[in-house]
Amino acid sequence: MGKSCLLLQFTDKRFQPVHDLTIGVEFGAKMVTIDSKAIKLQIWDTAGQESFRSITRSYYRGAAGALLVYDITRRETFDHLASWLEDARQHANSNMTIMLIGNKADLNHRRQVSTEEGEQFAKENGLIFMETSAKTAANVEEAFVGTATKIYEKIQEGVFDVSNESYGIKVGYGAGGSGGTINPGRDGNASASTKSSCCS
Image 1: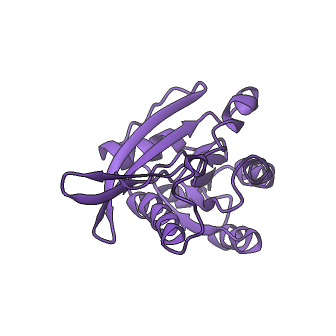
Image 2 (image 1 turned 90 degrees about the vertical axis):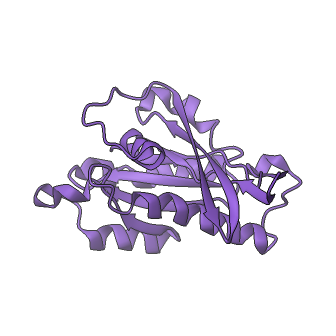
């Protein structure tokens, strides 16, 4: 799906065309600014293979957001979305923000899943939708920051009890005033799981 490549593009601004399969879970972090506040995103990149599913399920708990990723050039990855989404919703907080990502948009000539199909799945399941390219960096920053912004809005609306760290959000105060850490999720196979912390 390119989940690890998306994370690498977001955190390091680089593309690695050959990437080993994720074994278990990898971790990434990045500071972003949302509403003039410094927010640290803590991102868990979970393995997509079925053999790791029991391990990756535990990362849904305490996640404030997730990126559910499929490869637009491989229909089978799109066909498995419902199963990954059910997994996420069963094991995560009901207020978790989920963004559906159609990755590899740079390979439009090999597309097997239309943009409209992605939009329709997202609409039917109450997800945010975006197509990205880890190779060209198209919409990569927007996907992570967009997910984090939705989480931040839920914090502002009181949806999350920030005193309860089981929501994946930690509020703290840095030297320059208030800031935070939120984790929009990194996806596990067609699924994305994220641990969040907000406001450091």
